[in-house]
Image (cartoon, rainbow over all chains, first blue to last red):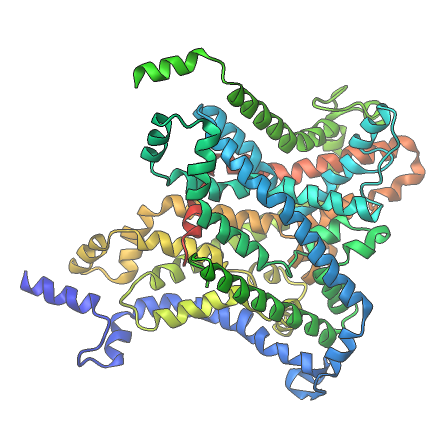
Length: 318
Length: 293
């Protein structure tokens, strides 16, 4: 027994009594060996690119490499900030993200509450399966389906609209309608998946609260308003903060695949702009400036949102 | 309590009826667009032209699928994607398990620093272009490795896995240690057999990511013979690759329409066939991920 205790103490111990660092490294050699490939991965593919960010301040030349290229200070930043397309892409990113959030966020909570009211396990499971389905489709497929539905001449939706005697709607070719279509596609894709987190939070609520409310004569709606929603308040706030802190990030796939030349004034967002400027035109320094600017704003918003959460008494995310 | 539930059943609760009705409509909205695509892919030229296809195929035929079998490109792309998905999922799982297991142990020196180093990349990273340059310099440009190595570990998946490992009772591992097991043996003989649900979940997340990945293939892949399914699908659906046959008349174009739909079906069905079976598990996985890391 005593032997076991000693051995376990050696296994558990964290802070050195008299033992030097080599004791721990030798004891946990297998764990460090497991970590080696992971650390290598992060250094090579995440931290070396961070070093590469310095080309934002250089006149990057492919042949001279990162360290060999000439420092030019903030000239790249000046050039980027003077480009109209840069500001347009930021405006579009914010608009698309904001509209998507405004529709998606309340709807997701609403659907979660509706699903939670379902008492038949089979209905619940099957409907959840179908609601999760779009999340598992790629944006290429979603864009293909959207074209099938929304194309101006032969899309199913427009055929129905024409059948009812109205004019076809340019869902994909008119700037205003395109924003609408973009939001619809995003909401369609993620609304079911988004409910999981709220359903999980609702499951954690103490049943006795509902029983007490029921005895006091509270109706279903009242129970939702006065028990469910207040109980998942912190989850709602954390999810809102997480979404707001992603306001400046936008995936490349959706705007690139849904967009076309006719709606480029609303579909050109930061990621597509970086792609066209950096990958297609090989303007490495300029596009890195945009990426760096985006990351800086992201971190700024994140810290701000986190402060705000802590101010109103929530846990925050950092 | 019994009386209450009985009296509840007798009256029709309109709120409940509306709730079920709305959810059913929502299910249809989520499923119909895909069902419509399936119906188109099986329908005859005439039906596709008339635009009357809705829920079910009209004048059922398999021409579009026969055409896919004849076109080698789609199969080549499918092979590439299957390969990338298998390798990416395997590598991703191994690295994620190793990282999560080692960093789930409180006793490990430097654990906080290494975890911090991983989590930091969630908030700040080099971005598209510097990463692109690194991969180019490593000679991975236009190689399939560029698809499954640079995004091998996902931070969210790492957090989920680590949270799961932390919840396994310490006493199990300590008992094994007393019996002379090393950390590697503990991982493989004790921890992993208890972790099959989470491995299935994270495996699904990685597999879906690689199957659906368009971004990396778009940026890193040049040669058509290395096109992934998503890249190939895009060029079939949007870049008018099928339009080349446009001169051959209307029948050919209509054929193109149902062929497009058949391509969507072929590219989606493998994932859609898997996820409902793992639903129980991934719901839990998302919950674990929401617990702060």
